[in-house]
Amino acid sequence: MLPSTVDRVPMNTADSVNEEIRRQTMQNVACYQGANAQQLQARLDELDEEWDVERMLEANAATAVLVGLALGTIVDKRWFIFPGIVAGFLLQHALQGWCPPLPVFRRMGVRTASEIDYERYALKVLRGDFANVGQTQKSTNALQDTLRAAEE
Image (cartoon, rainbow, N blue to C red):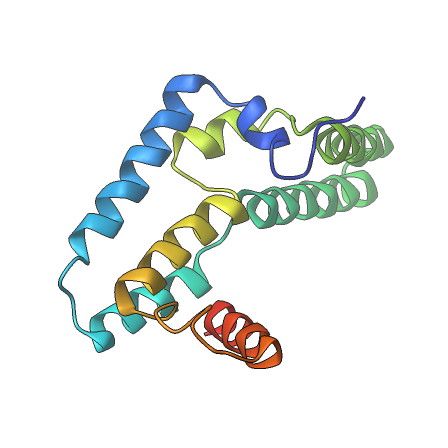
């Protein structure tokens, strides 16, 4: 059975690395307790720009494929094997959540989209985005309030 999208990368990351990423996220949020709305928004904007591990792996794989194709064209046709190997590792990552660069990126602190979102929503709680959620009488307004808070 294939692991879930949310769990597959942490499952293939050393526990100590996962713990360090969690610790750093908690420290990031703690730094913003008592921050004003502008400071919180600035951090949320930074999180919007943060590359998650999937994006890093995609960029890494695309670069490796292009290099392999260029070397295969210019240097020696045997280099064409390299993009095939990279594609195999990319498929393995898509299915299992592991590929050779993953441990390196995770040790560098590159987070999953879910880990980034965890910090994002903690900051939104600090900012008070969810303060009115569930307090509206009409279910339609409650749903709209909830979705609006999640979007911002």
